Length: 314
Image (cartoon, rainbow, N blue to C red):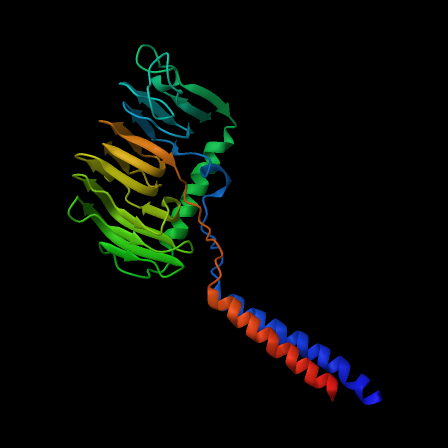
């Protein structure tokens, strides 16, 4: 009986140590944990962000689903029809008006227009610091994305590896014949660092397989000119398009599921362009265990318990 009591504490400690090691192996090998590249608490609330000195936003089409943030120097202008925040009939008596949060200084007829073509926008004045925070967070996100090591070269067939997929490329010019295909799973994030420009034309529609738009970030780092443009037919696009160095977005027939963030540049919506659905870059990955995790864990627990029982019989 004394011998049994002497071995029991060592057995208990050994069992706990073994179990801890087993859990560490199982979870580190078979789970993907959240990364630290996020939009922050401000940007993630807005489908379109146009902020900072030198920034401007011009719209003559829609709808633009979601909230719009302007301020810290934005000039917002518009004309034309279909300027609503939801799809469907849009005029001065029918439809949901555009929804603006204005932070700090902003100007332009978008703050007052409506009239015969569109419902008058709903303008909410928010804390002036909000636009400043948006600029800071947008630049931090762009810098963090740019600092990542590339994991693969750009091609028309991007396949995720189950984690953060980083693709650095100078320019992308796509049409219906060479539209990119992006495939992966719920643990994939896709970050495209584009140093010059992205141009989608002639009904270029990327194909997403097992991937949602909020898993894709286009980090556009040019400091002038058009860094993101669409033209010619339906140009359905997916993901968050981020520019913080003063380049411009020029759209014709854009149909976006995602988000637009531009600091110090121009965003122009013409010729049937729209944001059809708001899907901001989440920057975090779901933790999805592989089936083998449970098998390994169960087998290991049986082994640990068996070893403990043998020690207790000594």
